[in-house]
Length: 466
Image (cartoon, rainbow, N blue to C red):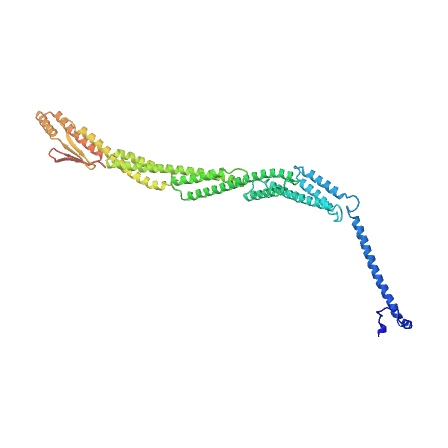
């Protein structure tokens, strides 16, 4: 079995015959061993060749990369692009300047990325890239600020704007300013950002003013509507001058507020439509207030005249009573029918008319009595006095005086003794005239008449014709 194993020891010093003998036995083994060594040698050679090829290719790749050997143009080109970016961002009027300047720096960074770490220009490229990336970020902030500013400016073109739209626009300007303020003073884009900051801050102040104006206009519109609503509510229950004064005051307040809403506000558009309505309502309220005031004045006058008339009635001064009752009636009739006082004045009109007629009747009676007294005074006077009289609303009483009766009797007796018929006829005519006169007075006064002799006996009576 050992013969089949490789001898781990040196073969020198062994029996040669044994070597020869074993030679034939191990011929196949030797051949096999030679084959195995050749195979192993081929793999090693292949690996060595592959490694060498890889190293060769790697070296070729490394030396063929930009800025490894030879002149490096990437760095100066990047610097040139940076310079172009600086020149571009100096144009404050060009809104595309930040974008164009950023694109040049991005191209420079893109080119610098091509320089491998084994290049002697690598550290410089890294420094430039770091610087340019910072500037790119600043330019991007400016770009975003310009976009927000453009959007804010676009929003402001469609005036008027609602409060929420002004707030949104204000927020855009604030965000734009915030982005511009992030650009430091040592940035190459700072002059551009500073220029825009000055503009945007002015715009923000203007926007805040417009927002304040819009908010104030909204508040005035709301307040005006509340006053109008209050006026409408008061109209429903308004009856007398004071309440209509309140209605008028509310409409005046609503009109004053809505008239003060400035143009170029959303509230102004609605206010413009409400203004003529409020003006009309104010005019109607004023007209109604005047009507109520007139109604109140005439009603109070009617009450005042009636009270005065009653005072004159208690004094039997029917002439004054009639005058004041007439004034009371006239005042009550002057109360406008569309006034709240008309419902109070209407029953007074009927009452005053009735009372006036009674007062007028009483006045007429007094006039009649006065006329009767006047006529009786004329009739009863004479020498001697013919009669005494008294008058009430029911009776005229006439009493012949003793002197008169005695004189008539004495005269008649003398004329009869003298047989003076003519004088007797005249005496009779006188007595007849007295009788007619007394009847006429009774008829004119429409008061019954009774005539008495000096002794108090009724000697005649007369009832007026109805």
